[in-house]
Amino acid sequence: MISARIADIKRFLSSKSLLKKLFFTIAILAVYRLLVLIPVPFVEINELMSRTLGASELGYFLMLLGGSLESFSIIAVGLAPYINASIIMQLLTAVVPQLEELTEQGEVGQQKIQQYTRLLTFPLALLQGIGMVFFINYLLGGQVISTDPVTVGLSALTLAFGSMIVVRLGELITERGIGNGISLLIFASIVAG
Image (cartoon, rainbow, N blue to C red; front, side, top):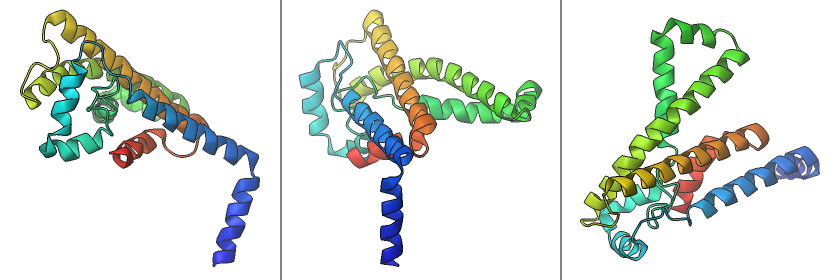
């Protein structure tokens, strides 16, 4: 049993294409973890960090975001808008005949639905970014982020672009790496948390 596993590992290490995919996946995961360190502009970082570090009731929430909330990272919104867009598109394919036809067209139709999902992700991420600004202020009981319209808009736009970057990183892992990229990024956030 153990010798069979060792043989599998040797076979894996001798395959250059698999090693290339593995290193690509690790590199993308490293980029993802580095994005956690880039805060959204306009945030009182010292105030935010002091409040989140002392907030034990936020434990599970902070864990799922993988540290992106402590510094209110540009990827704090994460993959939730993409997941929501995917669910919405799946529901719409059951209701809208044109989308149902796309699902029956095979690979081409799936690519078109994937494109619609990405297009739907951005406005959802923008709305979630606006909500996140107010939610963080409410959750931490103070004015950690200014709520004037310009600051809220720019913060939400930054968070929406951050979410789109994360979605693209996940897609790159799926296309050129090992495994489902979105699932791996969610797993990386949980492990980091």
